[in-house]
Each structure stands twice: as structure tokens, then as C-alpha cells.
Image 1 (cartoon, rainbow, N blue to C red):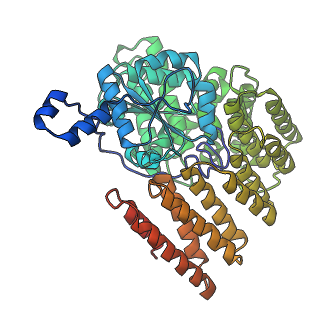
Image 2: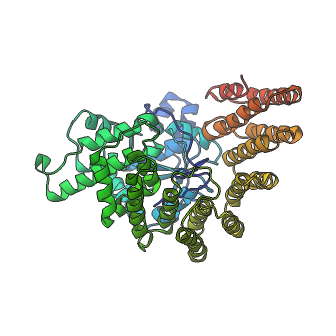
Image 3: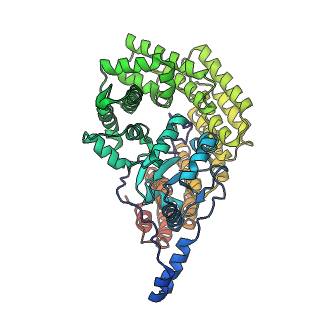
Length: 567
């Protein structure tokens, strides 16, 4: 599996939408439906309770657009849907696997193409209840608040009582993810308990150490640790993993523990930045070099290397130093080996090329439009794009890999190639508005203002789904204010349209949708620099006040709405 990068993806080098907004604490449990017998209800004479029980006992509906067709996915968009799913999980004494995603999201599409559609997943699915939450279903964003999920995709394994066993990583090797899933299904404890015991120095099973190493820290949303504290926590865990023959471990267990510790150290390095996080030392430099020298180890930890290889180089070495040049060469050689590994998915191989370009760009500035790259690497980027365009037939895989490849070409400075690839795939994409937003981003970076606004507007016009439309509309609106601040009429019209659409969505002031509207409100405040802007702002505030009055007050949405335009 891979988290395909692009302008809206979680695993992106330039993440803007799939999973970039994080920061919540999760401590409370779920409240699955507690069944009540019909006789007791009749004795109580409560018609209302009878109605609620009948609704909760109704079998959960299969998903209309399931993530895969090899198993039965239950669709959920309301609390009642979740209660029915948990009632089923309790009745069958099975864990519940919740997948939160969106139609357009590249990493979601990669999961669908590679992991969810696999035979191994289908076989394992007999042991859990699979639930699909599409972020654009009515009410789904409220579920996002309930489960503390923000980034697409997020995959959570929960016990029937609603406690989280673990969050599965979307970018790790599929076999490793399956191993974590199986460990959770075979009586795995909630990850919060496992983490607390690990930090307290208590003994953990090998499966529990694996759960911590392969936990999806990127979608944790500060439930286990705040992002700023994550590198040090990962380093702390890495140092606590039993090594060698500790506790009478067999050679196989000792090897597995070594791999787990290595992964935790690598994750700690990849999440350290700007003087924050762990400090480089001889042990860490030697560990990274050992991983890079061994093909099997490189492959095992490839998701960490392709998501943070360049970052590791920056943490471990000084800019311009001989040590940096040597480490870049070792890292690039390891990635070249992976690049020709036919057993890797196209998405994984695309990630490899992206990271090779990131390494070659070190020291040139992240906003450099035409980086100085070796000609063989540029040719590789062109050849890779041509190969992906010709090989991919699956629609899910195409949405994931083509958008990543277009990003790759832009990072290489091959903007015309990137544009051509995106335009060639507009008619082949089930979510062309995503590609249109990439075209807008490409044009904006190169200073083609009118072309950028054209693509941003078209991407908004073609976007589908309430949460997606607010997100894409906010993106268009922000670009409009930045690139055409003098166009007051157009700015007001777009903001007014977004507020009207928010009024139609029962979950518009929850999670991603609320953050999209907050982006619009913040941009309006930033734009408000004179009498003309103030008049527009006043009219929009009046419109929003009318929207807020009609929003439910009980679940906090009205307050969120009222806070949007406050100074």
C-alpha cells in the first residue's frame, strides 16, 4: 500500500487536503446500542422506546459505493448507522473495522486498489464487521468528530465495546499491515493500554510491539501524543523494545524485535525537524546506513524511507557537508534498488521516484520551480509517467498513481509534462475536479494567474458532495482573494454561494466542512482592508447570521457557525 502524494493527500510532500488538519484528543468511548427486549418495552408502554429499539435493531445497510466488492461493507453516515453496526459486532462478538475516506482521495483509492480488494483482506474480513464512512454522506462529518478522524484515509480497528485497538497505517507494506490487523483480531488490547504499559516498562508481547511500530501515527489526531512530542515518544519506545535474547527470546523473535526497534527509530527521525525531536548520533547514523545497505531491510521500511528519506538526511547531516553527500548517495542507491522491484505496486514505485527527486532537491529551496536535477533523473521522471499512463487500467489505481506522478513531474520542474498528464486523464478520472485543482496549483506556481483561477473555478464547479464542495470552494475562494483581490463582486459571490451550500448541509459545521468554512472566514478578515471590503463583509456576516439561526444548537454547530466571522 501507499499514501499517494498530491495536492490534497495525507502522505504528500505538499499536503493540502486529504489529511493535513489534525489535533484532537480522544478519550471517551463509544456508546453502542444496548438492546431491550420487546416484552419489557411493552410492559413499560413506551412507544418512543419501542420505535428507537426497532430502528437500532434494523440491520445496517450495505454501502452503495463500497471500498471493495469482495466483502460486505456497511454504510454509516449517522449515529444510528454506527449503533446498528456496533450492535451487529456485539451480537457476532467481532471487532469493527471503520474506514473513513472520500471518492476523490488518492491514498483512499490506493487502499481500494491494492489492500481492500486483495484476497487476503477478504478472507480476514470474516472476522470483523466492516464499516465504510464516506465523508460526503449527509451527517458524516459529525461522525468524524465522534471518532476523531480528519485525514482521508483513516482505518480504525475497534473492539465491540468501541475501544480502539489500533489505527492501521495506509502506507506500510501490505503484509505488515495484515499482520497488525491479525494481531488486533486475535484479542489485541486497546492501543492506549499497550502504550501506557510500554512507557511504564511492563512486558509486551511481540504483537503488541508490532502494533506500536505500525500504528498510524500520522492519523492519531493527538489521541496518543501531540505531533510535537511524537519524535521523542517514538525514540523512547524504540529504546524500550527488548533486544537480543532478552527474556529467553528465540532467534526469530529477537530478529522481529530488531526490525520493530529499527522502524520506531526511523519514524522518530522522519518526524524530527527544525531542531525539534531527536538529535543525531553515531548509533542513528549507523542504523540508517545498515538499513540502506540491506535490500530486504530497505523494502521492509520502504514506506518510512519514501515518506521521510530526505528528512532523515537533513536531521542526520549538515547542509553542504561531505557526510550529507555520502548519505544522499547511499539513500539514492537504496531507492534505485527498490525502484526496479517488480513486486512493489506502481504507487510504491512512484513514491520511490518522488523521494529520489526530493533528495536531489535538497539545498535548492522547496519553492524552486526549476531545480537543478541530473538529466538521467529527469528522463526517469518522463519515462515513469509514460509507463504509468500506459500500464494502469484500474480506475482506483489510476486516480492514485496518475495524480502522484503529475506531482512528481512538477517537483522535477517538468511542468508541461505534468499539465499534459493531468489533462489527458481528466476524462478518465471518476473525480476530475481533483486533477483540475492540481492544474490550478501548477499554473499558480508558475505565475499564470488567470489560468490558475480558471482551473480552480472549474474544479469547484465540477466537485461533488457537500464536504468536498466546501473544501474545493474554500480552495477556489482563497486563490481568488490572493490572485484577484480587486474582484470584490466575484469574491462576495463565491463566499455567498459557500454559505448557501453550508445551510443545506446538516453537518456543515463539523470537522472538515467547518474547517473549510473557517478558511473562508479567515481569508475574508485578511482581505478586509478598506470601506469597499467592509461593506462586502457586512453583507456576508448578515447572510451567515441567518444561516446560524437555523443550525442545530445542541451539538455545537450553531456556536461554531457564530464564531466564524468573529474578530
